[in-house]
Image (cartoon, rainbow over all chains, first blue to last red; front, side):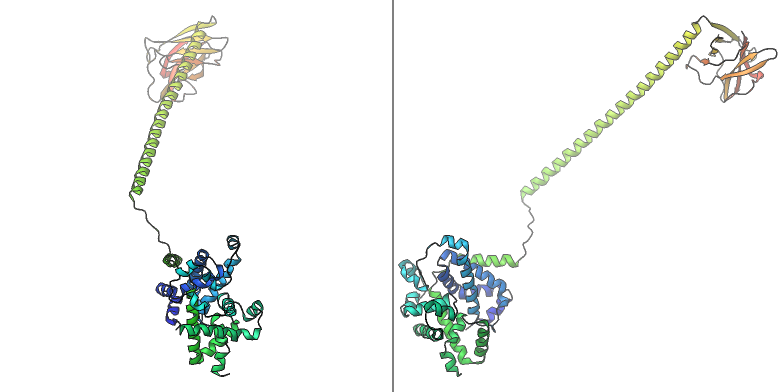
Length: 175
Length: 261
């Protein structure tokens, strides 16, 4: 359930509400940002910027525009993409050897550090390679259907339904 | 479109992703708000995405949250002005007071010295004036002395009047060529208040007196010497006591000295 009461308190600049919202979403936001910037240190910086923005601009969120989580996602992806496009970032990240959110699997150290009960492997194992790419672009990277269709060379009309079936296989795992 | 078809289309997933246009997002939000079944589906999708994204996190340090809370506190609370009350500030005040005292003392000292200097220079000025006055007097006396000793100068004694100044005389030194006359009236009694001695040039047959000067300010104090110039041709000289400022014609009742050449 969306924490409507907390969101209202956040808009009234309630620090306790801010703290609770941070606890609820910070790890998710961190994962999203890290998938884009591919550097935990930089991701940490971006995450701080994102939550400062959440604090400063909370009144701009309206449930009529969509989910609060979606609002957070948009801020996070935009901040992370801006970071990736910055000169400082380009200088630091000369070569990255991973493509999408499943990159965590390539390093055993990273796997061990994930304390979450599920872990990424549980999700990735359930997904076909095309599903990983599709979810990566649409959810993690914020691509539109058209951009995803062009990038993955699949018909535009099938993006919506394919994505749903991909996500359904994950939902079964959770439920 | 039925609710089932709506769900099966996959638009709700894209809605939660935020992958739709702004208008589509608002439309879906409105549709979901009206339908409990759609709401449940959206919640379920969101839960899955929360799980998935959480699984990609490598774990946030607790310090990140602390930093953030600090930042939002700084941005919303005005900084307080800190009043320094440490011992160092007292040392500072003490030093400032000592310095101020020192400066005031130096100023006072400077003023005293200036005052002393002014007194000394004033005294010096007074002395200089006195010296000038004295040397002027000496000069005048020297001139008179020179005049008296010149060959063309004849000494005339003007005996004191029997009634007003018995047993005295006034010494006069007359130079016919330069028309100068020097009178020494030191033997005459002191002129009373409001009165003054006046000198007259006299010619006889008929007796004609001409004023040649009021003997008010002596050329030399103490000596009562008077140096008179532009004396008309004279056969004698007289001295009378007249009211201050002198008279046009002599008061013969107050004749003090009279003598002929």
